[in-house]
Image (cartoon, rainbow, N blue to C red; front, side, top):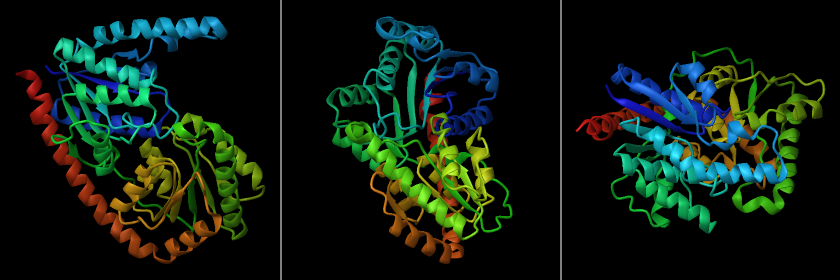
Length: 392
């Protein structure tokens, strides 16, 4: 029996991360139905309830902090950072393989401190080397990290993995620029392309708008509020334009952190035909997206799900990964930055997207077929070099 663990910010409300996990779990359960599973994750209770497998908190601090503040909270955080390497070792030694399923674990395009996930990922690699467990970073995202401490931890963590693959060539080259030898690393599609798409639904001219509590990235902390105001002002203005044209609007999110944004947009456009239903998974998100004609979205996995459902899409994105994905799917001309949104350009892109909807839908269907085939190839490689190899 193969013992397979899963590591990451999983089960804590990020639909993209959990969708990546779902895709890998489908592969594991299909090819290794008798495998023993476990999780080291941010939302262990949710994962145990969902998958019926034991799960452990990724960080000691999370379940022990309670309502601690001030010096007590700081002391608990320090204690947790001292305990976490030993906790990680105790968990890792129970598995033959630990999979990090997708996610942007090698990037800092959103605010990230070195002592958060990078620290946990580093100790995963160290303890795996000590125990003989194999670590696989599968279709992960990466970008050049400018903060020296964060960069040091991330690159060391990457080097400790036994298998690395990236969700795009941009990620692979980013790791190379940070000094990691990527000559043996592959590039395969994002794991979410391995999920089943929804059945087509009647759209009635509806437009999907994927929104985010966006405040910039690691290098934007000084102007985070300014970035957030400009982004939301553009989204609200665009939603108001759609409402004035009598278009039904569906708002989408991708993380619990985004929960308040739809309500703010709805309040800014009173009387509009806007629906913002709660989401529980990427497949739930794709099901809702099946009911719209086109999508404008910010979160990476909102953009991906729109493309996966063959919906012509505009990426109002926050990182190069959004643009790379759009280029790979044949829609590179329909991108712009959420940091400096241009409303007039957004409207022009939207009009062109609608005019070319039939043509672009056909392009997306063909690109999706290719992505699915490439992802299956990665699973074949993982079986041979990671999971089967762990038995020797």
